[in-house]
Length: 109
Image (cartoon, rainbow, N blue to C red):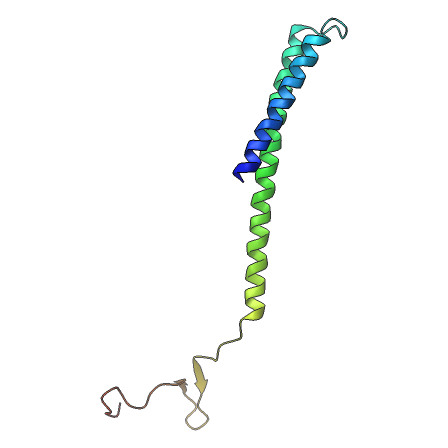
């Protein structure tokens, strides 16, 4: 993203220099007042800020969409785990799955 920021700063500089050249060159032909010339320069500076903001917003939205897409793909691709508890038909109580009937020492639990 750093290389894009450098290019956007370069674009902002080109826009600002272009506005300054237009103001200096055509000030008399366009009857530009100092107030209007100042407004043109402020507009040129704000265009650069707006472009940078839009690019950053687009990048953040793309990252959020990508993370949501990854979560959906992970949810679809991951197999469902077995339940932790099953109903025992004999005594109608729940019992844990895959519980060892003996401890590590071999004694009954």
